Image 1: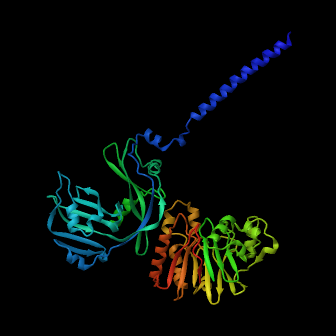
Image 2: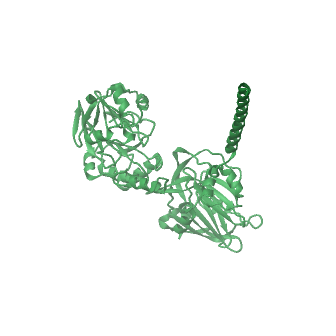
Image 3: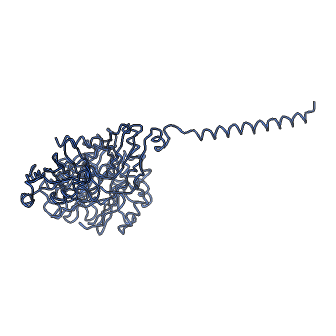
Length: 270
Length: 262
């Protein structure tokens, strides 16, 4: 036996084997890198898998909390108001108004137009933005704005307008915040995609739904003796597969889902 | 006497107090480097320190103690139980720099009288300090779950307070902290809320110019503006209008307050 040749053959065979084993190892490693752990799939992909779409997301920036005080309306203000009979309720916090003559709110087509009514008859009317129209109750709900941002579901800054079958406003009920001051400290905002993710992870977003709107506003945060504090809030409007829609609110600083916001509003109102 | 709240909050606490003869820190809850920087921002330095008074052994009050004491040879004052509790937390502080400062006693440093008093906090034997000089009085009281009548006795009628205003109760309750942490903070050995602090303040301030520094604010459960609003409105319901003789000031976790004379 030629030991020298045998040795060479062994060396070559083991060298080939080593190369083969190394290539196996490299392939395995590469495949493992490609596997995505379920929990690590990114939010966008998970939403896509469940058929949940969303529009272009707002820029992430900073915002500050804000505070304000409930306006106490005075009798003389009610006397100045024209074309309406005003009663003050809740120690002057609430205006209840009846128009002497119903005021037309007819807009283009079937849609009501509240602009002229707010400008002419409602104190600080331009500071309110329309939230919801309830055709059945013939009632529109407006939320007061801080700057350009609405304060969602705050009993103390809401305006409700009622109308009749002829699309004429018959009266309104109003509360208003005064002395609105932003806090000095700007806070980094919770990214909107994370707000969507928070809702998705908690099972609020249904499959095949479409997020049609994500926008910034404020929500009641803390009630002090005289002052209310408002937190920057993401409002996420979702259109469901069956055509109905839902609204969600997420604290835009700490990412907390404000799932009781509208319920509290209704309870308080009751 | 002059003082500056160098840093206040759960990331680290330290207060600088001086007169023409002596200079002290109360707590050294930040790294030595940070303390040097903060002192520099009020035009002071570590070399002038005559002592560090320790309130309790929580890390946000002693984080930089060991290194600072060794590097600058500064005497350290704490009560016996706090010294024991700090064993192993601050490294070796030479025996000649270790001094006991018993609860409810007074130590005199020239014209400074430093009075210690007990607070209610979940530490070995927590205590805070009142500095007296020429009839002027500076009270430091943070890290207490409530302000007892006994504490009120010690802190009555000061010219300046560094007063805890830790959290807004509803923010804490709504917030992300685990329940056991919330319970601890709200307990008698936790921290005082904005409202509770204000009620206590209303019972101890005298009718004279008084500076109140709202301190040890929770990063998650409070905000400077909220604390100020809440304290001023609660004070007002107790019959004290801020701005008349009581003046509220913010403190910060990273910025020293202006060095002011009391």
